[in-house]
Image: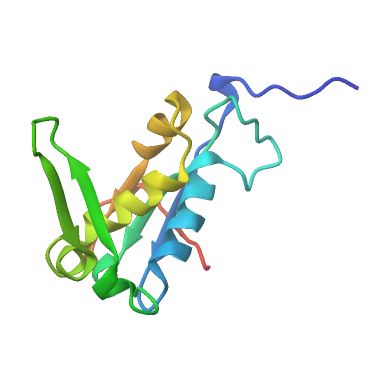
Length: 142
């Protein structure tokens, strides 16, 4: 029996909603990354982009365990001399919780064209409202 190779036109994409209220930021991000890659499907192939669309709501209510809220920082470099920037997760979660979730999910996806394409199917919202009701998303429990 030959190995199944998924083709781009054969892939069916579903929509899922993940509610992050009271859940750990990392666990929500890991579940979202798995859905975005398509690892829950029997037709998964690591070289093919066969994942689904994911909507994460209530990112502002996600929690960081331990002292991560105070001690953990997000660092990036602007490309200029002396351009190392740093922000604590306490500030990041209070001002831009969507960005914190995007950073976490992006870190769990591969640094390839498949990972970048998967990230385009992620929608993140700080509150409970989203404007994707027309796609009939299913609730996904973690």
